[in-house]
Length: 230
Image (tube, rainbow, N blue to C red; front, top):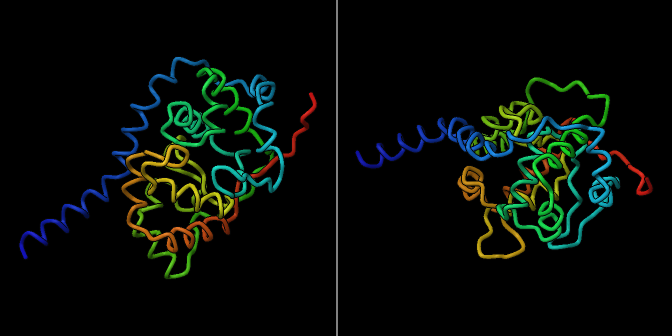
């Protein structure tokens, strides 16, 4: 009984430490990118030709390696876009198309693209300070300690390298969350240690419930149609 109490106490303390641990990993993982100059949105717009074919079409749906709507990245934080592209480039996020696109990008290219997408759209909606959830969903959010990193309204993360989740496509969020539970698949999977530890607690049904709730929230994320012809 004493060992059980000690284990429960240790688990509780580790849960409280998750934001600090995550922040430390972010600082370590992004140190190399600090050599790049600040992102230039105008330069990023000129470099976005490979992005707009999917991310510039409202409701566009990917079919490989899984079927889901392409995530909205207009209005997403620049630090997160840089972090995500870096993970695709290094193979920490497995996705054949995104790996091929990210592989040739320099740190400066990533910073410029991130700056371009962060400033889209120009007008930002007013968001509530705290997102309300039904009791069942609230319990899942508490179990995953989601607000500790992604913020009370899931649109103001505690660190810019974490994504805004509110309003993102539910099917994409579900696929992304499942990816942290996937091992041994050369085309699907994500290896972020914090997210792997959190997501493994949930069933697919629970992940889908979380994704649907997050998608229902007021959002700063949009898809801004862009011409393929420049």
